[in-house]
Amino acid sequence: WREKLIPKCRGGNDGNGPSAPLAIDSDGAVWGTTPNGGGSIHCTNGCGTLFKLVPPAPGHTLWTEVILHRFSGADGANPYSKPLLYPSAPVANQPNNLPGPPQPLSTVTNYAGGDFGQGTITTIYDDGSIKTVSLQNGTNPSAGVILGGPDTLVGSTFGGGSGDVGGFFTVVGQHLATTVAPSDGSKGSNPYGGLCEFSGDGTAEIAGTFHN
Image (cartoon, rainbow, N blue to C red; front, side):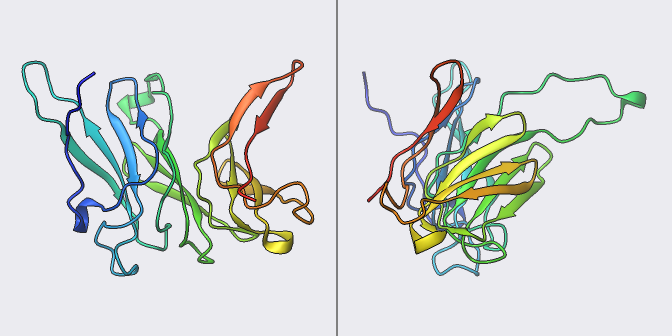
């Protein structure tokens, strides 16, 4: 293996301080988040970004950086999460050649911001639009979300809930459906790492870890 430096974050509008794992799409592009930078005046050091690094074309050596979204605080702030990438949807024939509905590209969690300042789940679409779900009962999601079923996202919050021990949530469509938290933290508290889905005895289950 050889180490190679591809575009680096320069701070400011470009993003600053990438901390989360990266995701790679089917075209070989690298997706990531920065918790700071982006240029928003609503956060001391910027509210963060979602970016993509596009590999060089054949015969070239330079990667291309694309800032897909700069967070403003209202739609979330300080994403520390690995982006969830969606598979490309097949192109369907639309009547009168009208464009089809926007397709989701990526969902990230934001540690802060949103309607209650407690974090958000934000989805970016291929037409540039975004949809944001603000957390209320849980606070400060650090890890990314995973797909828990058709149009369903599952994630965790570091704090909030009963006893401020954190918990788990589901988002169905664009609505926060459930928030589940340990009652007293005796079985663990403050989930911090990512979740994974696995099949046990014929049923799908989700596993995660607690910080304490």
